[in-house]
Image (tube, rainbow, N blue to C red; front, side, top):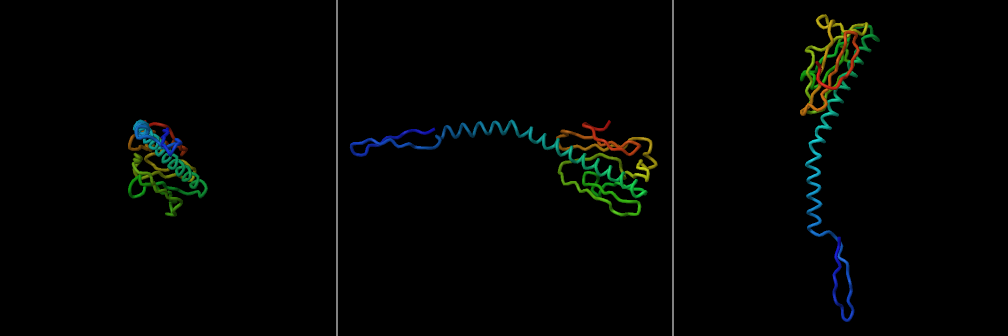
Length: 169
């Protein structure tokens, strides 16, 4: 870590200590840090993508549950529709009278959402009210750039939303 240097001062010899790192010690430390960073960076990216997909799926399922609850509470139709940029850009919850209940703008880059076109409508009983989809589950697949942690948000005919790990089948 350090080395002692001697110098002569008159009849006495003083030992002074030089503190610090040698160039070799510094280069070895930087080399080890670079190797650890190279090994850990790809795993970090996958972890961030995994968490991002999970977060968007939770937000979507939460807003779908809110829309269902609002439909029952207000005893009216409530729509959940994508924003102009598609589901990946966000979605909004509105009543049949056009009143905005909530709007969610996705701020996560690199997220893609494959979903039913045109949105979903909940009836006053909390069930799916779309005439063309009232006999099957509706599915949204949330992906990220690395497809790590892909999530499936599924709405059953009863209107209940759940999230599953993996793409929708």
